[in-house]
Length: 183
Image 1 (cartoon, helix red, strand yellow):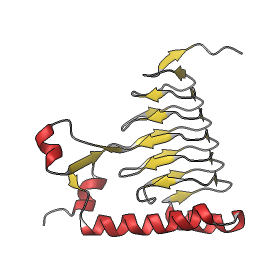
Image 2 (cartoon, one colour; image 1 turned 90 degrees about the vertical axis):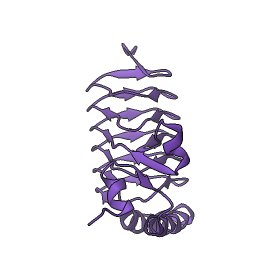
Image 3 (cartoon, helix red, strand yellow; image 1 turned 180 degrees about the vertical axis):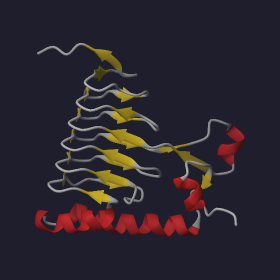
Image 4 (cartoon, helix red, strand yellow; image 1 turned 135 degrees about the vertical axis):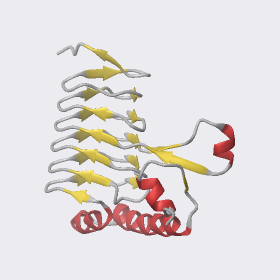
């Protein structure tokens, strides 16, 4: 039996994003996001738990939040996402316990083929993004598909993370490069 476009997407294979099943799931997520972003703070938790794959205790996601599907996002206990974060979750995006994410941070599990002809066919793909525990991500940072950030790492504001970040490492710049933190 051939795989559905959703099964291909979740496996990291090339898939057709305008598939009716995926479009219906995008619409569901967009409706929940509109309600979430307009809701009073007391009503947001229930909406967030309906949207996300995992939502640990004490998670805070400030409004202006955007994602594709929601069910591929897994936030452990005490995760904080500041205003206007974008998580493109065609594959899992996992954020570890106690991680703090600044405003306007973008995490992309969504990707596109590099081959022109494949792109012209409307095919897309993705790679998971994994963020460890107690990570600090500065405002405006961008994390590209397939990146893993180790526990206790620091991503400087505006950094573009194109490769893995080791546990405890601080990276800054575009592309993000390791530095010795100054106190």
